[in-house]
Amino acid sequence: KAGVTQTPRYLIKTRGQQVTLSCSPISGHRSVSWYQQTPGQGLQFLFEYFSETQRNKGNFPGRFSGRQFSNSRSEMNVSTLELGDSALYLCASSLVGQTTNEKLFFGSGTQLSVL
Amino acid sequence: QKEVEQNSGPLSVPEGAIASLNCTYSDRGSQSFFWYRQYSGKSPELIMFIYSNGDKEDGRFTAQLNKASQYVSLLIRDSQPSDSATYLCAVYSSASKIIFGSGTRLSIRP
Image (cartoon, rainbow over all chains, first blue to last red; front, top):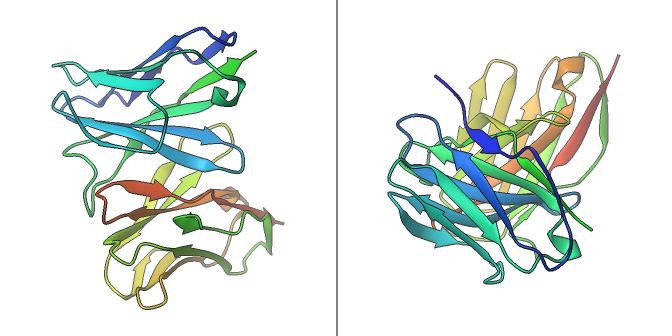
């Protein structure tokens, strides 16, 4: 079974631009969660999608948005990029979503650099 | 106060010894607790989860939970160089989301 696939692997953008990241979950998984990882801050929760609906979100500004398609693939968009948005963006899929004992399977991430 | 706190390390442990990793959390309504391991340049992978007070053992790994003290720990017995990684503590919070700590970097020295 294929794992979680994130594209692209690396991205370089300039301030003010926008970017779209893609995540394909493991086949049969209906939940996709997004995290931002920076040195010292660890993984910060962005949002979770389940069956095309945003089920939960973290404390990020509205410039960060996402969506999920009927095939469970998800995209994350960041508009008006700032230098501080430089980070590794990780996508995690799970069968039924973030629950008390649900295991998250992470993709390899997209490394975003904002210049 | 961060929701999930971990000592960033690095924690250096000799090969064959016990490595002890600690984590505290602020949300008393948190229901379950996870330990993920992340090798350098790789994505996190789940190694343990626990939701009841006490100890849970799986091979060389033991997770310990004390809800009254809001404290979770991970013990690694007979530490191997392959255990060198960053260990992330994660909590399923009362807000129904999994919150991660910033991780503890563990180094096993031969």
